[in-house]
Image (cartoon, rainbow, N blue to C red; front, side, top):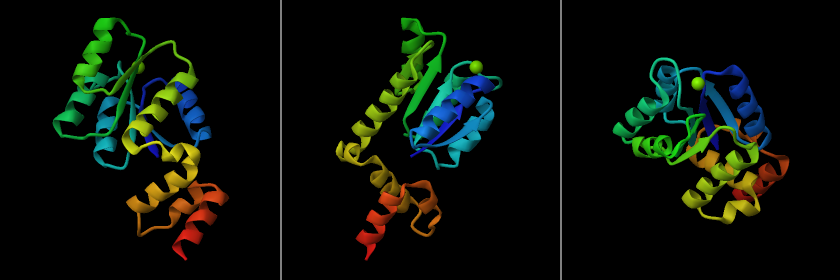
Length: 163
Ligand SMILES: [Mg+2]
């Protein structure tokens, strides 16, 4: 699963990138809303994490523009502005979820996994790497670059399945 983080703060972005990469996700980062919009429109991401306060196009506006274009990928907004009104505004703009700072990384991860479960069913929880490999293969049937992205066990499983 490929995640784009739209976050202007380097420290936060690095923290999220490291944690999510270690959890098995492919992670890219955009520094501002305009870049986030352009990158998301490439259509290669499965999940978006958006900071609310961004230079240029802010987080809410970014989400609105994506939804106007009928992009349905799940979006999680993260912000220090986390009153009920802020959360409602974020959800009404088109976010699937809203996480207020400070938050625990384990909660962020649990929310991403819960969203995956909701969208794809529960089978992958038994072996998420196999599922991820299969999804990548479905999306990029012409390439084999994905082999490097998954565990040896998952590669063996897929190669066995293809025989
Ligand atoms: Mg910010």
